[in-house]
Every structure is written in structure tokens, then in C-alpha cells.
Image (cartoon, rainbow, N blue to C red; front, side, top):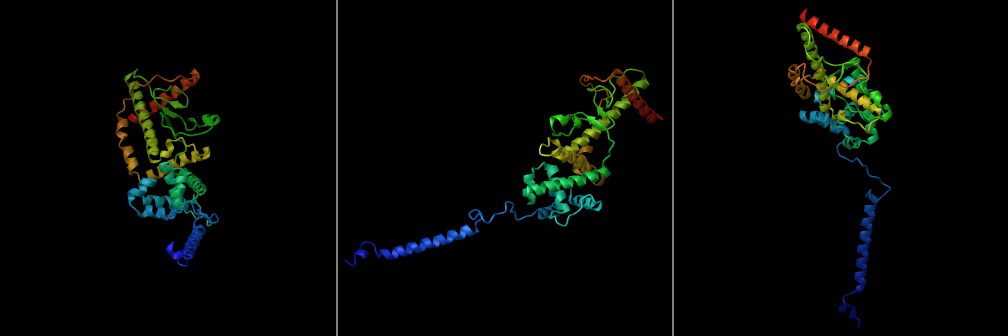
Amino acid sequence: MEYDGYVNGGNSSDDSDDEELMLAFAAFILAGLALFDPYINSGQRRRIRDSAQSGPQYVIELINGHRDRIFDNLRMEAPLFRQLCDLLVQRDYWVPHPTQRVGIHESVAICLLCLSHNERHRVLADRFQHSPETTDRHLRRCLRSLVRLGRDLVRQDCVGAIDGAHVSAWCTAEDRERYRNRHGKYYTVDAAYQNMPGFMAPFKGARGTAQERAVRILFNKRHASLRNIIERTFGVLKKRFPILKGPMQNYMMATQNNIVLACMALHNFMREYVPNDAYFAEEEADIALADNINPFNPMPAAQGSDMSAAGIAEWNESRRAIADMMYYYQHQ
């Protein structure tokens, strides 16, 4: 009988000891995993943004990398990018804070990447390894710096053009009228609009004496050229900074204003220092077309207006005086 255990399968007590040892070892391994795995151990939280490349490292890589890469991402080449950063610091438009880890180069890179690609803040946060709150704060800070720079570069008393060349804004219904063509001396409009106070339209028809026709043709040609310059400028702006295609629904109105002004400042900054970059070269390629426009090209019917007859008559006289002055200086 003492051999029954061996006949029926061996010593069961030894097998039981081995199983207990294996279970104890497995429990030890699981305990170790629970201690060091952040998904199991709730007491140790894992960082969400755990990329091996930090924001400053990404910017350094862009600066030192291929010239096309930084241009594709930030819409300017490395020397101009460094010059812009230096200019903002030198003129005290961007003042460093000793307690903040984000420097001028990273701050400007965040802003340019946002404007150039209309990136969401969460995408920017992941790219630069900061929280969305930090990313938003430095984006708005850089926008304010560029707006200050724009005061040195952008003409404040400018002429606008109304022909679909707008920047879409997002605002509440009660505020919409405040952002519809309220600034500037007057707006150049095409022949579909009536010539009335604040809106300068071209002459229609070519009746009158030979000199009167010449005066109108000269005025219409320069009027069309001015409108084309403005429209091409908006075209270049929107190609370089797609965020301007709007609507900018994720920003307060004050930030939307700063975005537009910052893009204008960057446009003029690049126009001054690199007038032959790819976007400006494309703009200049269209200049010849503006000079070949028929000054009396047929347009849709004029829009109605509720302006007084006296006001419209006075505005028509102002247009005639401008045209006469153009003709006078052209032939003096």
C-alpha cells in the first residue's frame, strides 16, 4: 500500500509545493508591475506629453535643418526667423520672464505654426510638449508682440477694397455691424456698386469729349490697378496664413483682431526683408494682368443705395476732381 502513491501518479505533496511556489512567484511579478506601471498604480501618474523631443529641440531642429522644412512649417527661412525673434526682443515687444520656460524662439514658432496651418491648440500642445493652456497663453503673448511690431510696419491710414477680399470673423449677431467695412478713408469697389460716400467706384461708359474720356480711362485704369494690388495682397496673406480664411471660431474677438494685425505685420516684415520669397514672387507674376484690364469692362447691375441725392452728387464731384488731378499730373 505504501507504493500506491507512486503507481497512481507520483508524490502529490511535492507537486503541490511546486504549484504554490509558482503561484507565489507570479504574485510577486504582478505586484512589481502594479508598483511601477502607471496604468495600474493610480498613485503614480504618467505624463500625457511624453515625446522624446521637447519644444525647444523641435525649434532647433527646424533652424538647423533643411531650408524647405522650416519654410513649409513656419512660412519663413531660418535667418529671417532668427531676425524676427531678435527684433521683437530688441524693441522690447517681447520681454522674457525668468520664471517661464518658453523662450522667444519657441513662442514665435508656436505662433507661426498656428497662423501658417490653422492648427488646433491641442495639436500645438502635443508638438511643443506643453499643456493647451500654456500653448494658448504664449500664442496670445506672441500675437500681442507682433501687433506692437506692426505699428512700425503697417500703415494705419489705408484704403480697402470690397470685392470679396475679406477676412472672415466670428462674432455674436449683435456685434456683426461693428466689423463690416468701418475703417479707412474710403473703399475701392467695382462697377457693381454705386459710387457713394465711402465707396469709390470706377466710371461707367466712355461718353464725353476726347479729354473727358481720357480722364475717365486713366482713372479707371489706376482704380483697377489699386484694387488688384489690394486683392493680390489679401490673396498672398491667405495663402501664407490659412487661418485668415476663417472663420476663427475658437478665439475671442480681441484675439481675432490680433491675428489679422499680426499677419499684416508679418507680411510687411517679410516684404521689407525678403521681397523675393516664394509667395511674393507668385504675387508679382500677376501684376502684368492688372495693366491689361479693360477699364470699361461690363459689370453686373449696380446695387441700390439709400444715400441722399445731395451726398451722392458731392461724392461724384469728388471722384471727378481726383480723376482730373490724375490727368493733370500725368500730362504736366
